[in-house]
Length: 436
Image (cartoon, rainbow, N blue to C red; front, side, top):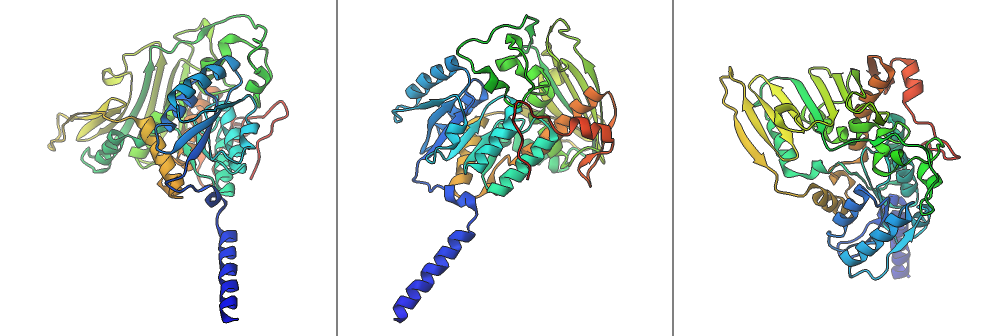
């Protein structure tokens, strides 16, 4: 009888432990198990992430989703060749059908920016872990609801700011934090992209029969189909994205803010316009300068399309300008240029890149899932939301034409009109963003 009572007691304790276990543990996968992945949006970084995912041991991509059948069919054939151990790849137009599948553990959200929040939240509520492309949200309010959803459903969510997984970026920040540069009063972030060029202004047209355009629009305002607003070029229109500021800015601003161990800025002002390509189809500025005021330093953002010759002869980068020297960091490496008047010799030759950031980011993501350690992620949803907020502030200052101020204690703009107009994106076509 005592053995029976002990057995019942042990079973009761085990059941209680299962009930108390966070829901993400239900999807935790041991190192020997296959992790099954599905990709939503396979035409850009969604595909790059798919290719990185299948290079991780015991990871299989088993389903693809896209609203463009021509892209979807092409990617399916490519994936079958790249992943010969998987004999069947299911394809979908409706991403909800992926979320209904119990055998899928991870979802890649690689769609245009205006879909990120809703698809990430829906994936979390379906019990999936999520790799969401940057910027994590298309408005500050969306970013905050994405954090709330992750907390509600206990999903492991990695944001696709893959530079956080590269050794040379981490080494550069370690040097900045060492204090060897002296007092850093200014950081400069620039993004000069000569190859980026919007499309010509063309007439609206009928939707090709292989594209589900209504599903592509989703929560964005209804508009007649126009090829110059579609696929890659969605990023130049406010309905869907935020131009270079949110496309490249979340990568580059991220390191400036991390290097200075800063939170959100106190104020932001910006100016710019369509100076390079005024005749082409775009709404976002092709030239933009923004000034961010932080507590003990200034941050300058400088972006331009159609030009490659940026600061320090680099087309992109971050400069930490200190009393003793300036550290310059980009995707190619980092170096320190000594201040001529400095008594401290801090010159550092160029340290070149030797790794693949996207692949390392995926290894980190899968490791966090297998070990059930969300805090080990290199870019949590909180990290992604923070820098997406900083980038959105630059765009909001430009669009409003005002110097905007931020109330960090209440997490909102001090100007009620700015708060009401820009804090949260409006959802259309029957779509709503869940609130938590």
